[in-house]
Length: 473
Ligand SMILES: Nc1nc2c(ncn2[C@@H]2O[C@H](COP(=O)(O)OP(=O)(O)OP(=O)(O)O)[C@@H](O)[C@H]2O)c(=O)[nH]1
Image (cartoon, protein in one colour):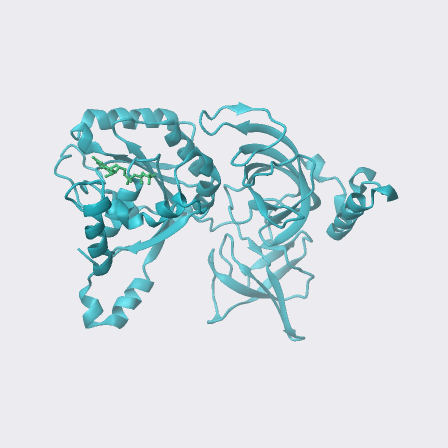
């Protein structure tokens, strides 16, 4: 059935209004090749009636010639665009697909399933609240299942839905389902995800995807779409630790000085006492200004401009936090880094780091261990190849406020940029600030540009024999 709603004909304004005000769930689908990912996404789009007449007619026709499902419509063809582009050798990182039900809007990050695509999965997972991990009921928990779960967990996804697919090929056996649940639960003791659900389903026939299956009377849980509609994600947001990384200081005239940025965590209200970091200067919020007028409170994700009661010196890259917050300032921390480039990460090499709105240079001082994403074993290494994930020690050229990624993903993450090519080569999640002794290193005596200048001189004019200023302490 194609997309229909009586409201479209009767009251298009109301239809659009209702549509706009539904909340949004971003999720990622992961599975090994042939687990049924495309069929599942096609099924979700089809059964939630988000396919349009012409699309349905086109895939019904195509199913007869190139489908794999005999007489039935091959829903995988709906999402095959990605596949054909891949076959032509075009690099597709992540395809985003949109659909909605009466309750929620959804954005699916669809990432290719092959092993070399860790980078893509990390990209897709970085904005997702939930991950659907597909398991072929015939094969149970596979290496890929563990890898996908690990990456989703690393990126802080708290809701995992383990979709045990192709149950039709196992006669919808409750015992088989329970075996897989047990197997996964044993593995999942290593994960931090707080909410893990299991659904027995057949994407091909539509069992327990949108419509409840008569083949699984022993299953009393929710269907996949019910899980997607009902998973509580509002509590995932950190509303207690105020974080506003300043993106831009807006000073159109002498009477107005506003600090613009997207609220990364916490709730911001006029009258609230705030502290600027790294300076530590305290003031109070005067106004929270937006394009649509002033707000009495702002929530994470909102783009705002804040004015303060006092003139304090704040620049791009600084943070506003609550006045009593104790955020460590440091130039060193440990982080999990996903390497995203063919040229390996080299410890000791100077890169640019972008943390929230702050740009500065730094280096990976050492690699504590690399994690084998297939076995989850840790081993030592000197360099990180494309798609490698490792716990690293990072040292920056100036002390900055440091957040744990799990507490505040927006301020606890960073990207690494090659200084010559300007290409993003890695992404990282901060796990812990280095010890307070390390952070006491007076690197702030030198401004970031002085570090950059020093590095530049040493690189391009080695015959000047300039010393590394970091070694002068
Ligand atoms: N019997 C059965 N077959 C299924 C089911 N789901 C998918 N299939 C079949 O499994 C095969 C692979 O399905 P796809 O949806 O293309 O799998 P995929 O995971 O997207 O595969 P890639 O796109 O190659 O990563 C197709 O022949 C589907 O028709 C299911 O629930 N039951």
